Length: 216
Image 1 (cartoon, rainbow, N blue to C red):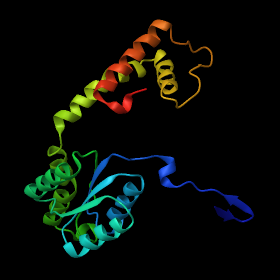
Image 2: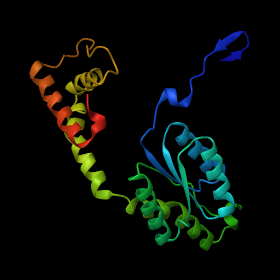
Image 3: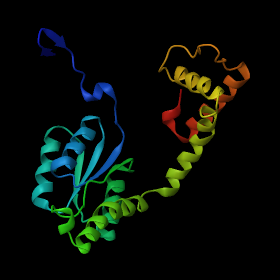
């Protein structure tokens, strides 16, 4: 409970707003600053974490402090400009947690200086530390599994994005998932026919075979 003037407010905890329970995140540059703040937010929402940093003197205290709060966290030294280091982090994360769901890239950039004072080499190092670390980390992920999951969702997505009936499909799916109580549309929107509802139910059941989170 918090008070603003004479008004008492109940502020929900992050875990009450949404959950990342069962998800696994890699956070680069996660030992301090913005990276650590993002890691703590993910952990508070229930995610398991692999923190990466170049310096043990920053990484070890960060991991220790987060574990003391009850979070599931591992840490690993990594220089994201080196492909072998990146591969090692992905391999260690999958070995420890079984998968990777979330990637936070919080590394790189040129050194602090006026724009025109930076050399081309410094700008290139910045690109290598920001853009290329995303490329390397993404390439080391389970690309085929990601595409398989997208392909499983695609038929339902196509139904939901149709001009006109797409809104009815989206509302029906939300009702089936318990998000809303009714899928009724305001006029002139037309309700789904029994045949269309049966088709959406079939797609939801088919999708749940690939992604258990889609089960209704």
